Image (cartoon, rainbow over all chains, first blue to last red; front, side):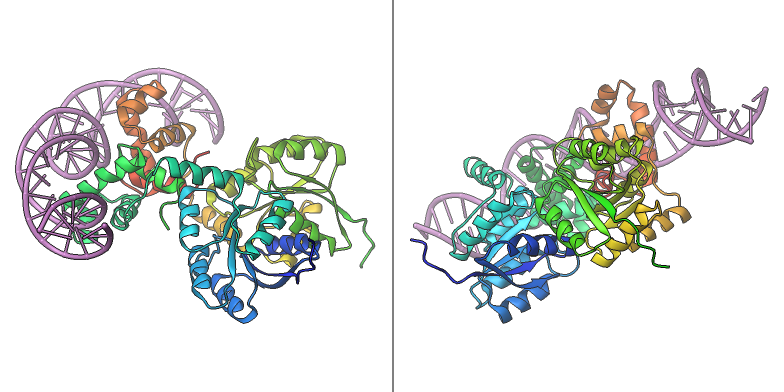
Length: 212
Length: 212
DNA sequence: CCCCGCATCAACCGATCGGCCGATGGGGCC
DNA sequence: GGCCCCATCGGCCGATCGGTTGATGCGGGG
């Protein structure tokens, strides 16, 4: 059954030269995987994907300057190149995972993962099959059981202002609504995040990376 | 003037296999730099440093499980091996930089740095000379000019409780002090962080990584 | 010994928050 | 057309917060 496939063609996208070098070195030892390009930013990744038509794009979510990994993923998936995006990042927070999947990522791996898992995931992604790191899979499962904190757009707006340390009156003015509305939203945010103070809400928001 | 030196002996410490592979690959191209070992945790790094006596330890500050990079640095510097610790990490917040330097790090580089800078920094570190990434250097300079938010231990305690979303009464009980004292500390924390609400304080604390 | 930073506490007061009730209107879905 | 989610608003009230002023004690450094 071991038909000789053409190699899987990969594009790397990570803002850290060290990480790109690491992936290049690791993947270089696999004969059936070929790195056809490297991008240090989201914009570059989108352009290179269109030009090089890789099978799989290895994508970091934190890209420093410019558009982030989620937006980059969205654009690549929406493009005509038909590339699969395999997210390879450091964090496994619910918000990151959810946003990446919604953006159309084919898989989600953690950088702490063993190299063999990475190779396997790349081969899976090339065929459109999904692979998740064990911790990520656990979180996805947990989420299925308990449909947790999904904030609405407006609630995120409120939370953003709250994180600036603004009072209700200032939040109201910033968003062109009344104080009463701000308080209503805040109450629902407390419920969803499982807290009962503004400080607690900000804490959870930062830890869960609920804000850009 | 190009005397033939013995190669600089390096120990890598990073919990991500991908990063270790990247550093190994990058450093492999430099004849005068030799990687003598790799550690995936702080404990391992301390043990390997004692055994292998490298000239320089490349240290990440975020190490997942176990002791963190700062504590690892402290132990290595306190050890008898006489190794220089060169911090190589992702973040350049004031708190991280300060803690690393106080722990005895010889240099502080960002992973986004160009490989050539990394090589140069390693050679400098081997001789005990300090190298800082430009953004890091800027922050250190800025700190010199404006002696900014240095929280006392007690203030950090208060801030920690605040981040849990606790009210003044609960913080007081948790730390065995009166509410009045809590309020006094909070007032000074607001001053130092440049905010005037608890939510703002938590926000700054999380962003500046002032809490463990 | 004096000064200063740090931690501790007290009393006061106006502003704000958080929780509670209920209400309206728009948009998507079946 | 009904249903539900979302966003919007109002009023009420007790609890909490934030700012202020002032005070005590302890330890280190000059």
